[in-house]
Length: 102
Image (tube, rainbow, N blue to C red; front, side):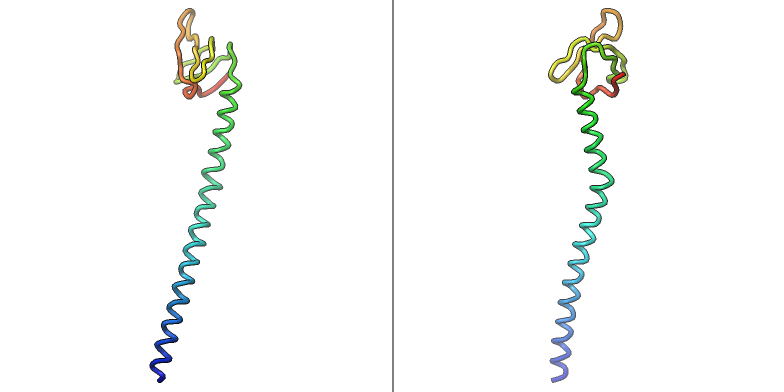
């Protein structure tokens, strides 16, 4: 009879340990996710919002750095800009290539 009781106690103990391990692992994953969100996702969202604000504020006549080339904006299209890099030399550049507005 004692052997049966010992087996039941061992099985109950193993089931409790497994449940505790599962909750511990879930808590560990949630903590890792929170750390990644705080240190990687939030700052990147903030940077992207600032970048989008900069792109939305572009005006004809602004001096910009796009793809390593400095120029003055001559025309703003939906997805690109036309910028003059020298007298009479106008190139079209994707808005995503703009790195800085002076």
